[in-house]
Image 1 (cartoon, one colour):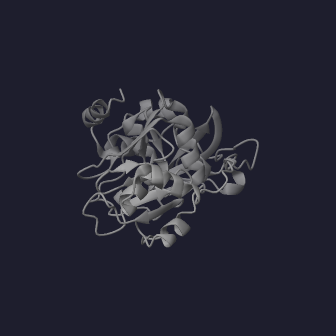
Image 2 (cartoon, helix red, strand yellow):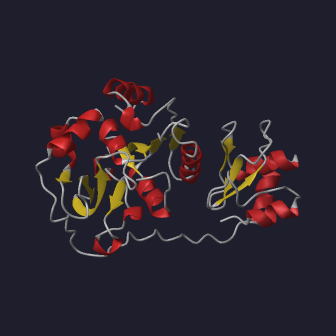
Length: 300
């Protein structure tokens, strides 16, 4: 781990430890490699790796310091040793287990009512395929989850959580989560569809329907916010990650969150790339458009 604040203070380099471009575990500066008017270059405090999200410059801390201080790189390597603390491996966060068994809502049924089927058809899905592939169920007119699709969440083949998606897109609460006191593993320690990742390549999306449209290569953070536990899970399962969140037109914050996620993954995964949609979200894509995206990034 590097004491970057002391390093930058000692050499009069302006830096930021918080703000819109700064992710947890990173310290940002103005990029010396491009016409950066802000603080787009981040340095990972654990690895010393840097990356600029404006010009895509990346590399090791020694090269960055040699550029900033106009000294030879061998001198910068000696210099930064003074700011490297004895490395202590941080233990991975445990995935919180609350119960030994998850019980789905008693009103949930394997028979999809016609209104649930029509909702899926209207979103471009084959209800029978989605039910068979992802084990979805339905709650009809009774219970806390009425008029919702029950979405089981598995981890290592085990049912550990669930979410309930409203079939009315105008509902105040589109996704209703299983209460934490009833889950086996909490939602913020999971990635939806992680069991189906193959060849250590993943397209990271926001929601359940995005996964259904993108297929086995996709995992969902279940929202644009993410946790350290999810980052660790991605680093365990993936060598390549492609982030495909909602378009900027649909959600202005989506690209910002995608950049933060990419920033957090940069030092942990071999390849990280942000894919941008011109409009809509991945769940709105046609299957032909999905195949084109997969071919473009070589994930088929």
